[in-house]
Structure formats: structure tokens, C-alpha cells
Image 1 (tube, rainbow, N blue to C red):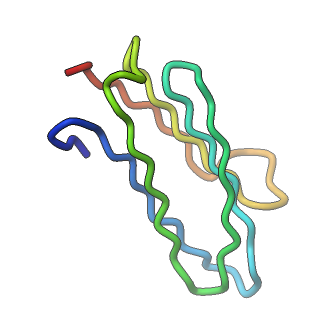
Image 2 (image 1 turned 90 degrees about the horizontal axis):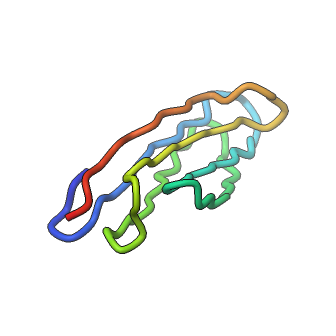
Length: 85
């Protein structure tokens, strides 16, 4: 989402399994990577939010990758391109 002076990356992660599951989130902003994780209870949803500010952008390439515990392939991987203000 584009804000007044920033972009906001938001992803709702829902655990459809019958056990607590850990998810690992990688966000790369112009190749500067950040890693987060969350353990989500069965049937629950976790909202991941990251603010991205223009001063942290060169190319404006943002890649979001989500892994589920025990899986080698990402559950989701998306790349966005934004313009610097």
C-alpha cells in the first residue's frame, strides 16, 4: 500500500493446519534483507506489516518471500517495484 510518505507491506498469514506452525518471512528492499518469523496457532491469522521509507530505496525493488516450517519451497514469493518519492 502506498502511504503519504512511505509504502506499507502487509500480508495476512493464516494457519490452516491442526498444529502450531512457524512461518519465516524474508523481505528484501533493494537487496538489503530482513528476516522475521511467527508461530501461528491452528486456525489463526497473523498480520505481518513492514514500513518501507523512500530513504531506504535505490532501485525500488521489494521482494517478499514466505516459508512454512518444514517446506523448502516458498508458500508465497512476490516482487514489487515502487518509485521513490
